[in-house]
Image (tube, rainbow, N blue to C red; front, side, top):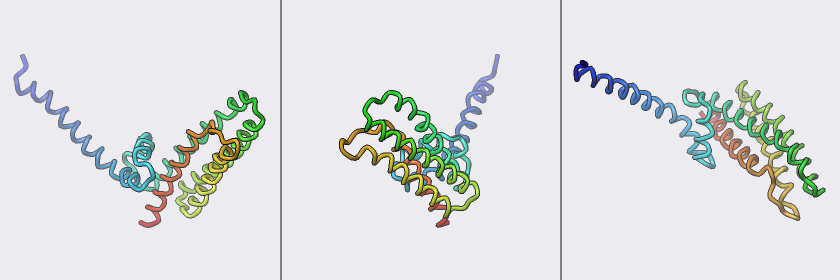
Length: 179
């Protein structure tokens, strides 16, 4: 029969190890939290950046790469969604609007690919230019649906995320440049 001390050690040791990892994890989240406190949407920022396991233990340049890669994934989702949406549209104005968005999102994606290279090369002035160009293209897509007759964009959920992710990228690059 096991002694009471060995039974306690079986229970206590895992708790100690877990608490140590919990403390390290909270310390590593501090960088992500410091970025997210300066973003437009703290909760979105935290959930987005922490969705990538590299963000737990990284520096600002790596966090910048992660933020850009997350935006690339959202842009890819939009690019994949558009053909199915176009197939189901009947209204010529809706088709034109979505076709224009397809071009804008494609251009934004190319700008984000450039931003990814800029982030990886740590050329932050060029990165800001690429991010701004992508943001402008995303805004052009959104603006397609603002003219009369005003309608909800079928991509609004994704363009919203793109804008938030670019905001996060700006926060990170500004933290890098300001030291």
